[in-house]
Image (tube, rainbow over all chains, first blue to last red; front, side):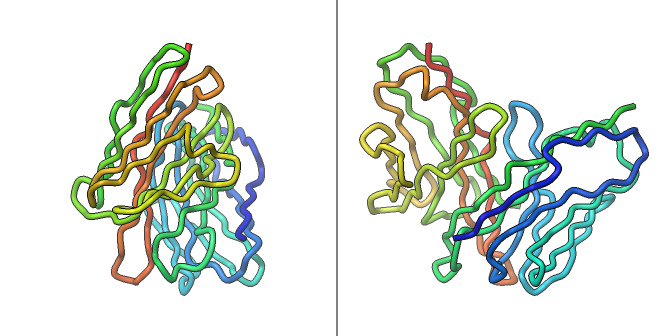
Length: 116
Length: 118
């Protein structure tokens, strides 16, 4: 059974700083890993999806990496802005994808505050 | 990309009443949808897997008689919270899978429903 953890739980940085959010998972036989953003009281916005065969994905100022051997994924945010303030969640399918229907196991999230 | 909607976005009800939440996949078919619950300052926890045309599968500790799930079509799943109590107040989010070109299944999430039981 996949377990996902995230550190740190909270992070406050000044505007313009580059930062890294960490995600760890227990089952290296991972099928994919997804990073989400959640604003207070809102739903999830999918940021990046890394397939098991990939090592990283990039979208704008965001770059996510996947290292299956170490059980880690990182989300790198370049030149942070106050608008990046939100909770960031990583998640992975709970088990085998043979049916393509597996729910996600979520980390506890990192609450990011970017100070103007 | 694929869009999942939820209705209502928020609801306030009195203790003892029932509330129905709808989850729809707008531009794709979903034989399976998932229902999650999120308490304040906590992460999402899977409640149940909704299977079109068959019974839902519930996670350990989730009362199937309290959280009724119906998945009558390929685009609609409903979650009914029966005899709601204040401890059921939470953020309920549904999701559905879409097959991507790389044969891996990306999940698309609804915007969530905030339930407050008074």
